[in-house]
Image (tube, rainbow, N blue to C red; front, side):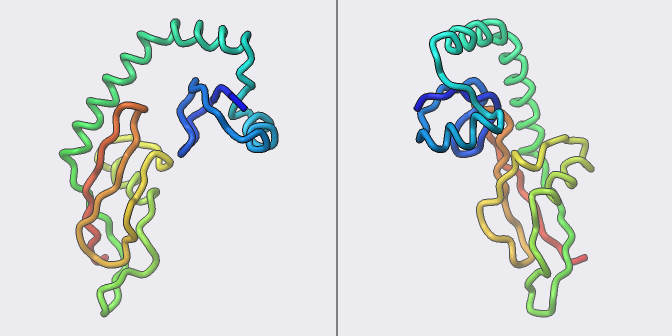
Length: 147
Protein backbone atom coordinates (compact mmCIF):
# COMPACT_ATOMS: atom_id res chain seq x y z
CA UNK A 1 0.00 0.00 0.00
CA UNK A 2 1.46 3.37 -1.01
CA UNK A 3 0.92 6.36 1.27
CA UNK A 4 2.16 9.94 1.37
CA UNK A 5 3.54 10.94 4.78
CA UNK A 6 2.24 14.15 6.33
CA UNK A 7 4.85 14.18 9.14
CA UNK A 8 8.32 12.78 9.78
CA UNK A 9 8.12 9.24 11.17
CA UNK A 10 11.30 7.76 12.57
CA UNK A 11 12.31 4.59 10.74
CA UNK A 12 9.78 5.12 7.94
CA UNK A 13 10.40 8.44 6.20
CA UNK A 14 10.08 12.18 6.14
CA UNK A 15 7.21 14.55 5.41
CA UNK A 16 5.98 14.38 1.78
CA UNK A 17 7.73 11.04 1.13
CA UNK A 18 5.89 8.39 -0.87
CA UNK A 19 6.38 5.14 1.05
CA UNK A 20 5.17 1.57 0.71
CA UNK A 21 3.73 0.15 3.95
CA UNK A 22 1.74 -2.92 4.89
CA UNK A 23 -2.01 -2.34 4.40
CA UNK A 24 -2.89 -2.87 8.07
CA UNK A 25 -0.27 -0.38 9.27
CA UNK A 26 -1.50 2.21 6.77
CA UNK A 27 -5.24 1.74 7.30
CA UNK A 28 -5.23 1.19 11.06
CA UNK A 29 -2.50 3.52 12.26
CA UNK A 30 -1.00 6.02 9.79
CA UNK A 31 -4.18 7.29 8.11
CA UNK A 32 -6.46 7.45 11.22
CA UNK A 33 -3.75 9.25 13.24
CA UNK A 34 -3.36 11.80 10.43
CA UNK A 35 0.26 10.83 9.76
CA UNK A 36 -0.39 9.86 6.12
CA UNK A 37 -2.88 9.93 3.23
CA UNK A 38 -3.48 7.38 0.50
CA UNK A 39 -1.28 7.86 -2.56
CA UNK A 40 -4.09 8.36 -5.07
CA UNK A 41 -3.36 10.11 -8.39
CA UNK A 42 -5.00 13.34 -7.16
CA UNK A 43 -3.03 13.28 -3.89
CA UNK A 44 0.17 12.71 -5.88
CA UNK A 45 -0.56 15.79 -8.02
CA UNK A 46 -1.20 17.84 -4.87
CA UNK A 47 2.09 16.55 -3.43
CA UNK A 48 4.02 17.55 -6.57
CA UNK A 49 2.53 21.05 -6.43
CA UNK A 50 3.35 21.40 -2.74
CA UNK A 51 6.93 20.29 -3.37
CA UNK A 52 7.36 22.86 -6.17
CA UNK A 53 6.08 25.65 -3.93
CA UNK A 54 8.24 24.59 -0.99
CA UNK A 55 11.47 24.07 -2.97
CA UNK A 56 13.14 27.38 -2.14
CA UNK A 57 11.88 27.27 1.47
CA UNK A 58 13.43 23.82 1.81
CA UNK A 59 16.80 25.13 0.63
CA UNK A 60 16.70 27.84 3.29
CA UNK A 61 15.77 25.31 5.98
CA UNK A 62 18.59 23.01 4.87
CA UNK A 63 21.11 25.87 5.05
CA UNK A 64 19.93 26.75 8.56
CA UNK A 65 20.24 23.07 9.57
CA UNK A 66 23.80 22.92 8.19
CA UNK A 67 24.77 26.05 10.14
CA UNK A 68 23.23 24.59 13.29
CA UNK A 69 25.07 21.29 12.70
CA UNK A 70 28.39 23.12 12.46
CA UNK A 71 27.64 24.90 15.73
CA UNK A 72 26.64 21.64 17.46
CA UNK A 73 29.75 19.74 16.32
CA UNK A 74 31.95 22.29 18.10
CA UNK A 75 29.97 21.94 21.32
CA UNK A 76 30.82 19.56 24.17
CA UNK A 77 28.06 19.22 26.75
CA UNK A 78 28.39 18.42 30.42
CA UNK A 79 25.59 16.29 31.88
CA UNK A 80 25.50 16.02 35.67
CA UNK A 81 24.27 12.77 37.19
CA UNK A 82 24.31 11.10 40.58
CA UNK A 83 27.06 8.51 40.59
CA UNK A 84 27.48 5.70 43.08
CA UNK A 85 30.72 4.43 44.59
CA UNK A 86 31.01 1.73 41.91
CA UNK A 87 31.12 4.41 39.20
CA UNK A 88 27.66 3.67 37.80
CA UNK A 89 25.06 6.39 37.49
CA UNK A 90 21.66 6.24 39.13
CA UNK A 91 19.06 6.18 36.37
CA UNK A 92 20.21 7.04 32.89
CA UNK A 93 21.00 9.99 30.66
CA UNK A 94 18.05 10.78 28.40
CA UNK A 95 17.55 12.78 25.24
CA UNK A 96 15.63 15.35 27.32
CA UNK A 97 18.75 16.07 29.39
CA UNK A 98 20.81 16.50 26.22
CA UNK A 99 18.16 18.78 24.72
CA UNK A 100 18.11 20.89 27.90
CA UNK A 101 21.92 21.09 27.94
CA UNK A 102 21.89 22.27 24.31
CA UNK A 103 19.21 24.85 25.17
CA UNK A 104 21.47 26.23 27.91
CA UNK A 105 24.12 26.79 25.22
CA UNK A 106 21.56 28.62 23.06
CA UNK A 107 20.90 25.74 20.64
CA UNK A 108 17.26 24.69 20.33
CA UNK A 109 16.84 21.04 19.26
CA UNK A 110 13.73 18.92 19.79
CA UNK A 111 14.49 15.90 21.99
CA UNK A 112 12.73 13.61 19.50
CA UNK A 113 15.48 14.34 16.96
CA UNK A 114 18.21 13.14 19.33
CA UNK A 115 19.27 9.48 19.56
CA UNK A 116 21.77 7.98 21.98
CA UNK A 117 23.27 4.89 20.37
CA UNK A 118 24.89 3.28 23.40
CA UNK A 119 23.62 2.86 26.97
CA UNK A 120 25.02 5.51 29.28
CA UNK A 121 25.57 3.71 32.58
CA UNK A 122 28.84 5.20 33.81
CA UNK A 123 30.62 8.53 33.93
CA UNK A 124 32.65 9.37 30.86
CA UNK A 125 32.48 10.75 27.34
CA UNK A 126 29.66 9.70 25.00
CA UNK A 127 28.13 10.76 21.70
CA UNK A 128 24.52 11.33 20.58
CA UNK A 129 23.22 11.55 17.00
CA UNK A 130 21.01 14.48 15.99
CA UNK A 131 18.78 14.40 12.90
CA UNK A 132 18.30 18.07 11.98
CA UNK A 133 17.05 17.61 8.41
CA UNK A 134 16.58 14.73 6.01
CA UNK A 135 20.02 15.47 4.53
CA UNK A 136 21.71 16.96 7.61
CA UNK A 137 22.70 14.71 10.48
CA UNK A 138 25.29 15.51 13.11
CA UNK A 139 26.54 14.31 16.47
CA UNK A 140 27.21 15.99 19.77
CA UNK A 141 29.72 14.89 22.38
CA UNK A 142 28.69 14.92 26.03
CA UNK A 143 30.52 14.19 29.24
CA UNK A 144 28.70 12.57 32.14
CA UNK A 145 30.11 13.92 35.41
CA UNK A 146 29.30 13.50 39.10
CA UNK A 147 26.78 15.90 40.54
